[in-house]
Image (cartoon, rainbow, N blue to C red; front, side, top):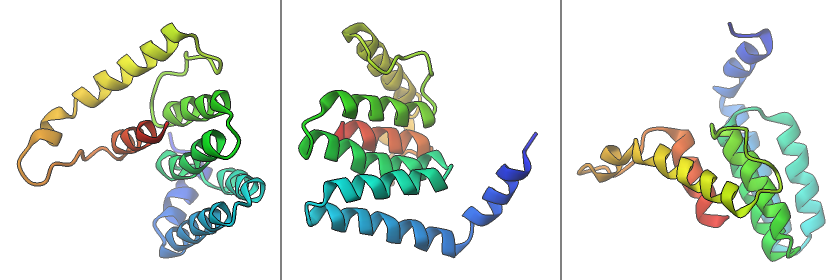
Amino acid sequence: MESAEDSSYTVYKKTSLYREALKMHLQCIEAERWREQFDQAMKMCDMVLSKIVDPVDRARVYQHQIEMSVWAYSQTAQATRITIQCLQELGMPKDITFEPTQDEIRELYDRTHQMMMTHMEELQAENPRTCHDPRVVMMMEVLSIA
């Protein structure tokens, strides 16, 4: 059963205003990163994350946080936590801890690999070579930067 919040989000999400606002905020985050204003960029990420619920859109913001955690702050543990949070929102099981052991990281990798393998036919097909599940596509993008 869809809640009132979910249905209003669905209607709102379809508007071009939503798409343009999200695009503008992501560009502002990127601009702050170029200016090396990483604290401001992180605050903007937090603000945007507080306003959006779509996991694919949230993952776009998490990508910035992951990269800044590693490159600007040298906080790989924080980047790992953000990556796991993002992957869980995109559909990975929630039983992975936020301070994973090597075995848990391996399990997360194996589960993600298995999930992607279910879409391998789509990826190997002649023209176009794309996966049609936006969550799996975003998982691949997030893992490519994590």
